[in-house]
Length: 358
Image (tube, rainbow, N blue to C red; front, side, top):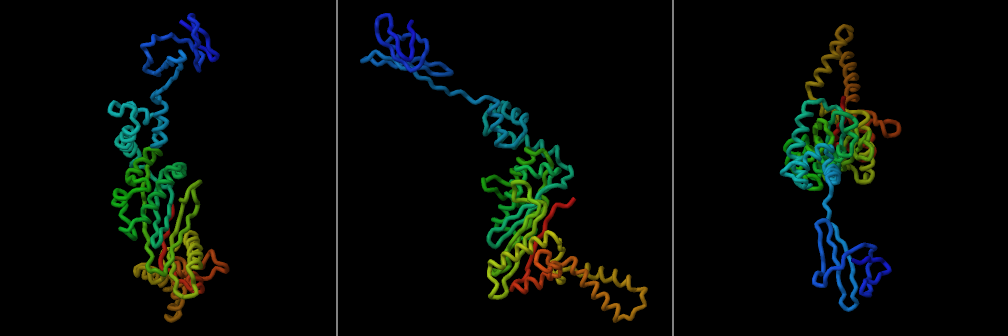
């Protein structure tokens, strides 16, 4: 037996011993170059010319269960106990990839069944504009706390991004078909992302509505506005997308884009129901006229006077529900929207407004 140190000691035979670690070790016969153990391998290498030995160690310890649980939570957002259960399942056997699949298959289904049917009145609205296409999506949750979570807002924006990049649909989109066929930027199906969000947040999450607006001409400009944005998010409590068309040569795209953004802000604030009087359904117009006629029935006024009064009341009616007839709430002086756009050489072609309603 001999002792090794950083400065080196002589053995009983007088040979000089050099080593890099202060450690007690047994001198091995010259026929045994190395010794290994299960946890770490220790090797003693002999230099016959100088009769010196060096010692090295290598470790390959597996991550602990606690470390695996932490990694799985970061990957999936699932609760700690759910992650421990997934990892300890015999068919998973502490394999991270298999654990993720197990959570998707069993954890998401269990979570979805528990939260199904719960009232979801909170949530976020997301917008994305991609060239001549714009999307706007509304996703509902049970609580405001959940809707402010990063997992939730990321999911909402992923849907908006995928919809704006899609070329298959416009208008009011079939949500189920879209979610099962579209993927996020990481290549995951949106339907799977929904299950992951439910598993992480543990609330009823529903994709309430999804719209895609395509510019009607190459002279059109699309712009959007998101109101009440969640912290560190591009999504908010309400949003609007508008399309304006350049109708005169002096109206450039820069001017049109600025005007469209202001108009989107107005839409969120004023909440119009229709684009212009011509777009109001006939039954809605007739119903309003009937109500006004009933009000005037006991006044004994001449028919021509009654007609003028009703025309005036109908103009006020249109000002309340039609975008083009409203007073622009963002432009200075609050001119009528149609007049404000005309003065800029623009025309309002379309809009979409979506907001969380309780």
